[in-house]
Length: 128
Image (cartoon, rainbow, N blue to C red; front, side, top):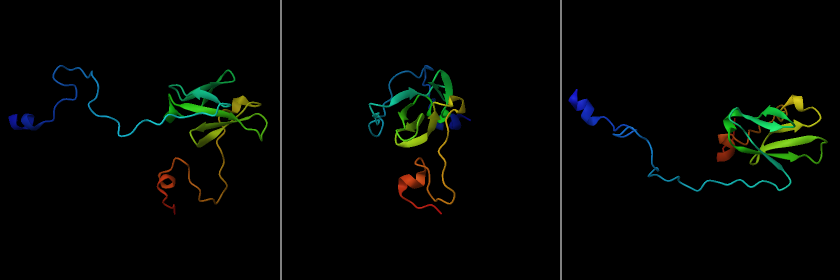
């Protein structure tokens, strides 16, 4: 029994039980700071995955909580606001029908195109 305790890893809380202090490890590269188009509106996704738009809470994504998304007025379609996270189009909001919430972009049937967030599109590997 004493041999098992001698080889056990140290507690993450340390001897005093506190976890304070700065980490001794640094992030491998600098964090990317997003730049937004000066004409676009920027909204912060809250803890519940929603943004505030047109006096409503609109669900965007719980995976992106506390991130900022860009709301860009689409010049081609009246009342349509494209919602982007970086270069990725998440969907759009319709100011004429705000009760619809975020409308997801549709893919055409039969296309082999993958999402911009897919591992395969980032690595350059082909799918299927």
